[in-house]
Amino acid sequence: MEERAAGHDSGTWTYQLPDQWFGIVTPIRGVCQIEGRENHGWLRTTLSPGEVCRVAPNNLIRLSRTPPRRLPFEVVCIQLSVEVLQRALDTHTTAPVRDVSELQTLRAFDPHVASMAQTLLHARKTGAGERYALSAAHYLAEYLLHPRRDASPRTGGLSPEQLQTVTTFMSANFSSNITLDQLAKEAGLSRYHFLRRFSAATGKTPLQYLTELRIEAACYLLAVDNDPVSQVGRRCGFPNPEHFARVFRKHVGCAPSQYRQQGQRASSP
Image 1 (tube, rainbow, N blue to C red):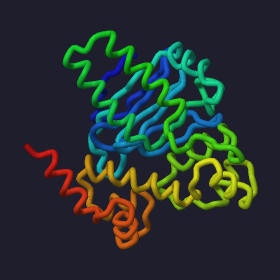
Image 2: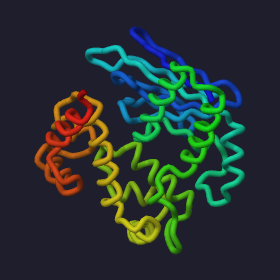
Image 3: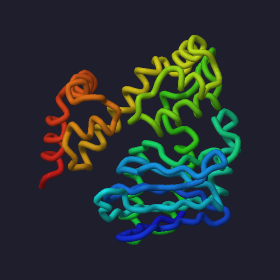
Image 4: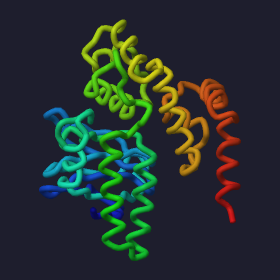
């Protein structure tokens, strides 16, 4: 496994994945636009702290500043051996993917991997050896195959492939107004059958699952970002500050501003 930081102050930065390497890109400073091939075409989106781009071998992505201010950004790039990923895949007959290339996605919220990226970068700077890198690579491979323990399929629910498709769609679009019809279409089911089988698979309704994903995103952004609380709420899919504060308090037990203050006190010397 290799990891490195890439700063960018002007123009466009191109990242080409070499053969036999799987890539993970995540911002550690600023926000950037990212372009890549997905579903046989070029797509563009914005990558923010806590979000990751997963890139299959031999694929190309382009990163650039976001308008209108076009502030500098810095990303961490993790290169994970396809051999390690394939070995993990071969030992998991219930994995939701059949090939390493299926793990690719242009944008997904994954604060766990985003936090790991900074940890790995620090470990490299402080001289961590090959054994550390190999252990981290095996852990990342297992995590990528089973990113959310509460999304493990249960009897009578969605298939592993359907569940992976739907939860990946939620993760990539949680800031938007996702409808039940959209999710059912991703799973290839009617609304009624999707709702019933998703609940059977996860123990939660799609709305409950999506709300928890949005709250997890908000907690991460409140801890690492200095954007106003209202803007954090909008970035996490909450239409207005009042709704954001009400849902956040219900799930976390305090207001978003209090959560941020508690995090700042905990991190101060």
